[in-house]
Image (cartoon, rainbow, N blue to C red):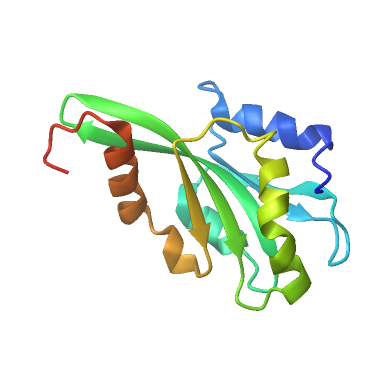
Length: 144
């Protein structure tokens, strides 16, 4: 089991969800290579582009991101995604625990539209994710 009891994780989650905050992502990492305790590693307001700069190829991490996009010329939507990052240099034992630990993370980062598994930073390009969000959102008036 992953230890997600650090109150800063829940606080950062609420900050990303808040309409009054500019924070639109939080990155959660393990305290150390051998620890199953998770902690907030970084937060920011620069979206997926900024988040990608904080991802470490040697680690497994989780991120919660608010994405704002125009569904059509009349409306804007905000949706949330859960990212499970497994870097190319992540150790085998850490990779093996990710599926079990992801369930624990989801008890804190509860509300999201889609889950995005990422192994390369290019997996977190905004345009393909917005297309997935539009498809998951149901009503689409622009043919996507």
